[in-house]
Image (cartoon, rainbow over all chains, first blue to last red):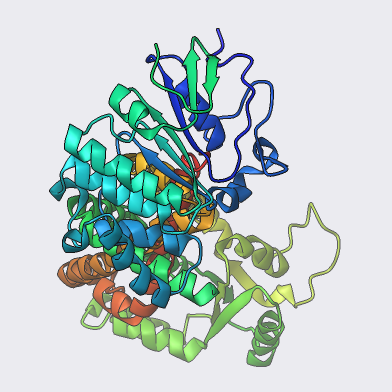
Length: 212
Length: 312
């Protein structure tokens, strides 16, 4: 049985899309397709006019530099501190040392973690780790942020903070693609909502609410 | 751009090495064992080589001439033999020298001395001691000096009528057996070396594979934040180079200590081959071999191990 079936939708630049659905509805699989972590058995995913699953694996990193990804389990590099985690994403895309020294403290300030710059992930709380992950995702000014249940492990206050940061990023022109289980989060955003069930998109509302 | 990348890769390699602490230490130790095996193989093959050379140098063929053979004819034979490519050295023992050596051997043995006096004349013939470059060549040399009449009708290039005896045929069995022993010892040594080296390399590869298995998730994350394959792989490969470099320094210290300890023993046993002196003379060469093996092994193992997790 396929994880996704008959999925077809398009996203405009600057949109804030929330993807909702029960566990196992296929939300994460859909995001993995967008990140090219997985390839579809049939069908294609286009970014601008490019079929991203036709890109050779060894060239994928150039596409991924246009995206910023945030995950429920943070996925920080455990042996690198907050500064280095963010700096790594900049180094990987070939930015200069001067840019790194200037931009990393700035983005950490943006997510409110300037004083935790030299802390390692296991010295940070869940909310702090997720903010580092978001800082890493936006450091290269990506065109799209893909956030897979970024608030899944967080308490209400941290959840609120994270969503506010995502809204700010979106207001600056970045497209945001968010999945969540949290009814309060969905209802507070008041933007486009895609609802998934059993591998299909069952609703697509321009200003949706959580309705399952 | 390229130098920035290289500098960052080297920096991350060193930081990762330092932060991985015990994992790095155990990798260095495993690589140390591997390189120690390889270093010991180098040293023991040198020992084996010198032992075999010594045995080989003890073998020669002696040509005894008739008592009345004129010296000029003997020197002719020597000159001809010296022109052969397979001959390493020829030692001419004249009748007088043979007698002097005989007297010296039996000094104090009155019975022999009396018998010698009784004869009055020198009863010993001159001889040539021939050393070949390889023990397998003695047969050919002996054939020139004492052609087998039943096999060849061609005349010998030297005057064989003055030759009294060639002792090759007496020693033939021993020389042939020695030849076989030398050849098979060489082959056995080579096979054992290959086997041990293979095992050591596999153990190293598996250790490094395990250390990189731990970093599997990290590799996936690096790829997702847009790092190219080379940029992910680089620091791991440089860590492998650090493993190899540190391990080869440790191995040199170990080999130094062992050769110092065994130096005297080997000198007695192999007479003339002092392991410590050999090590001291060839230390740089051995270090280069071990260092090259270690760094290539470390970085190439990392390369192979990371490759499995790059397909994200």
